[in-house]
Length: 307
View (cartoon, rainbow, N blue to C red):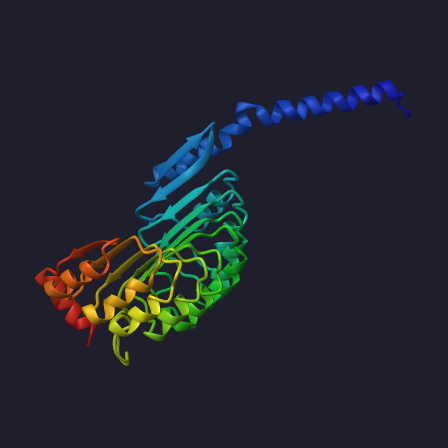
């Protein structure tokens, strides 16, 4: 049957109106609400905006498996995802469920089990601005952190935390290619002191928090000592520096006067004499210097780390 042009126009207009009504109906918008309630039932904290999930936070991921990761990956307006508490459900088998989260700006995980290839898949999150990985793939065979090299495509990524990871200098060489990074926080990895020179290659780094490598068999000296200070003094973009779990002297720290933009310096869980600190404050009058003295427990831990 051939329809008259007027009928065709009416039919198309009617169908468009029908689709519009369906997409705005409570039944469709309730999709996120149902997922939100299910995730809250598993212990998650969920933020809804106009019936769409925008933020999810878990501090215990013991109940998060492939099904839950898939459901999270279908939340098109999700901007912030925090999965702490051993999220072993995030692995190479499930990571692709998250790569369609094109609105995601913040991703934080603890205990995820990803290979370098799985880590690289997360570079599909093009709007990502902040990422934190704690205990990522710890002691996972074959994991090096080289997967971060794919992240150089994330032009909006500004902040990255990597901590508690069996990742060595290869991983930091990959991170050094993420030119958009402005803030890097790292401690308790398998890096060596040579890894600090890799970090110093980041062209837009304005904030650096760095602590000691993990103690382990075969480690050749600390990863953070007086020898690293001149390396950090070469990062002319630095505005804030946080140094932890090391033994530092005024002679080395004085090199930080070469940082033209430095505004704040925090030295935490570290061994620095009071006299050296006073000299440093005199040498850097324009820099806010904070020092957190060691507790006895922290001193014992530091001695173990420096072996």
